[in-house]
Image (tube, rainbow, N blue to C red; front, side, top):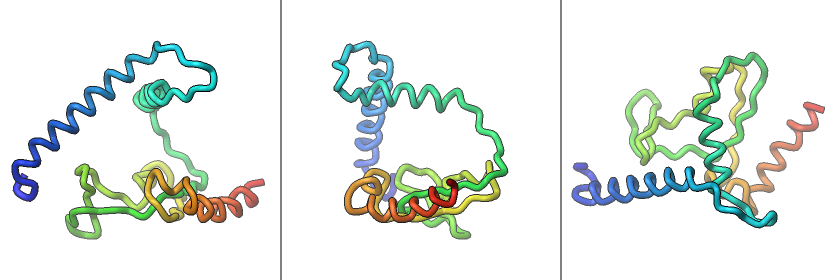
Length: 135
């Protein structure tokens, strides 16, 4: 609050309202859509329900994590960072606790733009040899 001042309260209220609307949208998935329409709310609701009930287990196989560059806002010591949503930024997105054999592959962009042109070409070039090796 010291850094943001009074704007902190407004930003908190804005985020809380967005969260409430998103929560209500998840429960309103009964609206019929045409077969060709893309229903983001229903997909998001199904994803959140699946995530909340899934129990992660250890796995001894190899994992390739493809992610954009990390963005940390506050340095909290010993190479640790916190992002603007007050979550720790972890090199392996916290997958290391489930598998010791993880390789992190960094691609350009952010969470959304890494799958869009031109960044998706870089990602495809990095994925291609992984798929070929697995076949």
